[in-house]
Image (cartoon, rainbow, N blue to C red; front, side):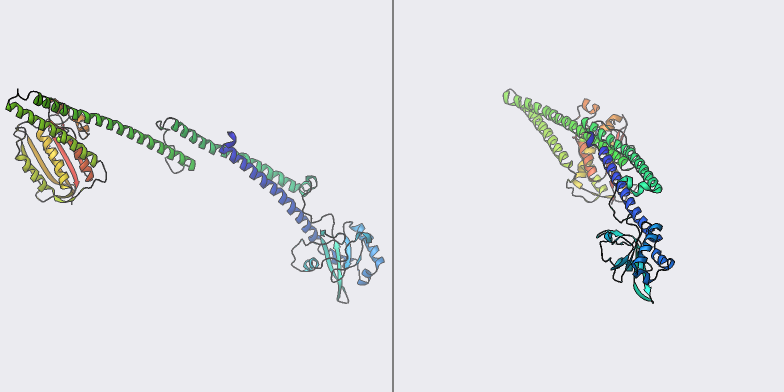
Length: 497
Ligand SMILES: Nc1ncnc2c1ncn2[C@@H]1O[C@H](COP(=O)(O)OP(=O)(O)OP(=O)(O)O)[C@@H](O)[C@H]1O
Ligand SMILES: [Mg+2]
């Protein structure tokens, strides 16, 4: 389990990478220092061959003389036991040398490195052939030899066969770093630095991964709580948080949104259940009444007077209308719940619409109450883009509600005017008004006030829910201003044309 954690993976990767870097550093420093040593040796001895020619006063004749060479061999060996001297021809062929015959295995050395060495701006080190070996490449110093201003050959000096150019990594004990104090110190310092970098890296990685682990356990906890328990508040409110903080923040937001959605779904489910039971209840009552009347009419047909029969039949029609209206309202409400409900909106003079409706209701004797309907309209026409049929339904419901609930002698004022650049429609009555709690729920489906229930006023409680939905499809607002015993005013605010 631990082996799979992000921390272990990053730590192992970091350790391996730093170890590889350290090994590469050692190898590079070994190789480069060796090359540097060779370069330094060749630099120091760059003019060795020409100096020998000058200092020892050697002439070409001396080079030709084997005895002089032997003498010179001894003196040179005493002065510097690490150098071998050769006189070579213009093409690199060995002509004479101060080395034991049996040790020399080559008859010729390559002339190319010699010519490169003799160039003024040559870059050192330059490796040459070792006459004592078929394949070994060595440091050398070389100088041209002239006789009577004529180039005869070269004095070719093999500087040290011990400092070969072999780049193979020898044991640490023999390595250059082991022998050099400065390099040994550099290697130790770099090793210590790498070690501290590794340690600090592991601590930092630990801190980062522990935050990721915390997030992961919070996610698991959230999942285990069936997406109901809020993991907490967002910790990053400014932009300074890093990616992990932002991830944390996004998770919190996502979790809280999910909780909100789940709550909303639960509420919707509760509402749906309530709605279904409400519908069942609202349909059952008229159905039971219908049932009773049908029983009465079918069972006691002969005992009933014509007047009774007519009354029962009227009641049957009224109850069946009630069921029909309820079903129509529910059907319309479910259609209006679709955000893409097709509205046929057109430019309409709202004042005219209200005028027509007022006239329609003024002519109807409602519950035998004498309720006056007044119009207070703006002088100039107030136009809006509306679905006239739908808006007719809204205003009608408001007027019908006011008529149903107002007492005899009451007054309803319907007004329309421009309000802050918008079209404001108001239906105000002098009826019983609404309590604060009623105002809060008045637009809920099936909501009916206690006072209207007590008074037995007809209605399903769907009218205002339909009004609210229609107004919201018009991108408008509907609200109520009321107080108990103070009448009620329903206001509709629409975009004005
Ligand atoms: N002007 C008002 N004054 C007092 N109470 C009102 C007024 N308008 C509505 N109400 C209350 O709000 C309730 C809901 O009204 P709504 O129009 O939604 O339904 P309804 O009139 O009962 O039935 P429906 O309109 O579906 O036939 C009413 O039952 C009534 O109790
Ligand atoms: Mg109504």
